[in-house]
Image 1 (cartoon, rainbow over the protein chains, first blue to last red):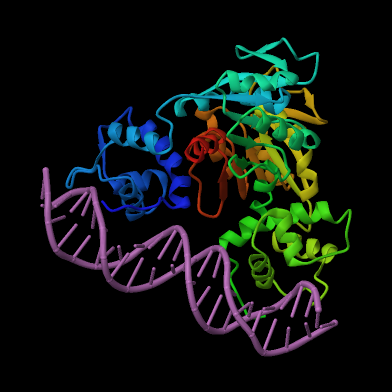
Image 2: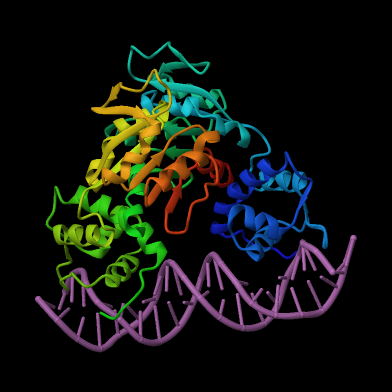
Length: 203
Length: 203
DNA sequence: CTATGTGAATTTATTCACAGCA
DNA sequence: TGCTGTGAATAAATTCACATAG
């Protein structure tokens, strides 16, 4: 295979493939691009092309070895090793995130949680103890380089700033606000209401 | 302006514009595509092209009237009238959604909430009373055609089925699962862990 | 002189279609 | 025969660049 930069859209789809394949790995050994395509509702040649960007693993006439494929996708996404993540904001949404069972399948470990409310500090949610937000600076020492922001909107930017200062490299932002960060820090924002706002257009 | 089908990518950006413009409308009267572009980090000609799909509102030399633009985008997204939405699943995530302040700015009103846990039924969260999930069928009568699924993964598909049966036209799905629904029902899925899974690739 | 609106050019992504392998 | 891997063809989205309006 020749060198290819992996298109952004492919990177966006890889976790989708991974999720489907992890599910399928309980039931099957191999799968064809066609069957996988049906399962996750995309085009089959799309799948083959996407996989071709990071090497060819399929067997003509048989399909792809699911476990091998999972390994390769994890490698591409840099998910082969488990990642520690910190949660900032232990309110409703933060608690929901701490309780969310889906992180483990991608190898994430929410290893720390922070809040500024004295009533919450010291408590435990899902075996994670809430720490004072002023101790964010310990993240670097603890080798935590991903963070999830679930604080109220007005605190979002200053939280992001503090996280950047603490050496965080990637941020998943749940506040309904544009957050600025140095280019070297990747920010992904999920604005729940904004997603909902797309629905009425289609109905 | 000639007829154009609005590209999907434009539809995806419209709520982003709307959010930014709503924020800016407190401070300014007009804005140029260039300034708006800087504000929300996109290309300025992208903005002009996007706006051109639904008509030309700008004044050369001046820019766009923010309030007029907000009105037009809302119209395009079918957000001019307020929409009622139902929440299914009043656990951690559901509670967070009920408390989320961002829906109002897009004209959403979470008018009903459902759960199957007798301990929760009858309680109120943020002035919304939790109803028994068996009364989903009342949605049609109550003119609620949008729903948010925040139930555990294993209950997601059956919840979706029940919602479709209750006449819901759009679903925002938070469960980490592919949900199938008739084509006429638009489903948008947000899988929190999957979004996070994209981060390590970029760092 | 500034900033829109839009064709044209370019870049990016998707889909086709088929040679070739197991 | 069944399915991969990939160039070639197509489609879609983005960006350029400029004539034109206020």
